[in-house]
Length: 281
Length: 268
Image (cartoon, rainbow over all chains, first blue to last red; front, side):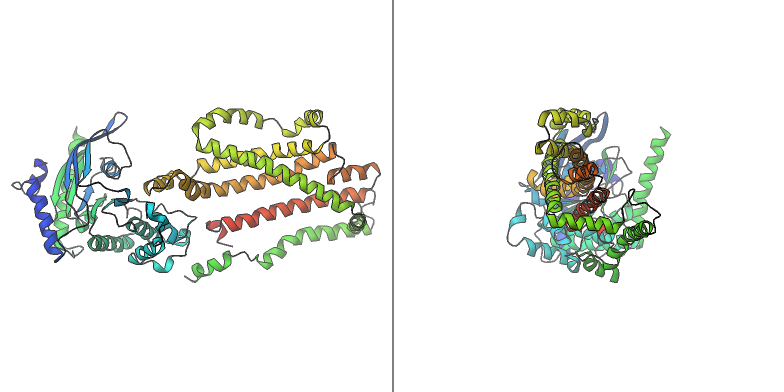
């Protein structure tokens, strides 16, 4: 953690930094000081698959409503971290705790693949996201609202097979949003999309995060995506958080701006350097 | 865009008229050539009667009520045997697809039984049941069991595990997961099994009725052979062809209705 912060500014304390981000976000949002998101605390998290120790002690606090991006080379354990947060894997050691009791509907995941049911129309696919509230009388209304939010209300009666890749991923986003989650975890959600669709999806993600004020955790291998979207970028190397970088660039962020490019460059250099170090061994 | 918008309309039940005609061109041409060959004496009538003679024989049998009775008996045997064998095959497919324990317990045995040609059991079946109805039902059920069992099992095994994980994340209960994810996912494969089974159903029934029966289409054909009524023999064979086609078409319509989400059923 200490080493992580030296990466950008050597003097700051981690906790101060988190508080600072929360304050900054509150002011940025004007009147909206309160966030719906859940804060998340991880202590000493370890996970192995067989002999392979994927996560070797993760300590992390994510304040409510923060947008955190997790980057790292493939196989560094970033996806495992996300799957543990989402409760898709069992924890070997350590704890993951939300500040209060989280209902299953409060934590949602979006994957690289849309994972839509091909035999259900778009609207029923979104209704799946309501979890236990599926049977309630306003289920359809909520699903329609979520579809409108991602701009696909005209596709409600279509089969997923006729949608484009980006549209499918937007339906998956609507499904994740429909239960009004307080933590949303993204596992490379844009990895399979073409460059233009990616950019418009990034804007959509940023907008829904801003509107719904959930805590967002984005796992990505794309550093430019990470710095464009996140409040904070975590770099994972060998199962540990190697760098914890605060992205202090005001929103809306100009894609391709010098500030973003400089930050992206420094993170990439760090990643490449450590790659060279390991190859020397 | 216009293509996408036109899909829901094309997908509806309406059978395309042109396609419906095209598939009958070859059978009609065969009948026409056959008639011509018989009328000109190219094919002697004791080898193969003309289609018109076959039709005439059919008309006579229809008037006597014999044809309808025999068709009904065969149809009843086929469908009851199919429902019994298919039902059991489906149940085993579900159990072994969903439960490791059940699979370990029964799959090896079933695979061993599968390798016995079920028609080889005819002598045994006659000893057990005589030429009773149950003999035919048993054979049809046994023949139909395996394609449905194997394809149901395969269908359930190959349901995308990512979709199952998704269902679990979104809090589906086991029942919901089966109803909304596993069963619809296995359905295309189950239909493949059903169509295989329909073919086996007719095959088994013909053989069983030819060897051991006192009614039904196979029996009618064997009786006709005794009296050298070659037109009736050919008629029975043609009726089998027609019934087989009918069963297959029924399966296709059902497939179209239940798999309308499938890209393969949206393009035509």
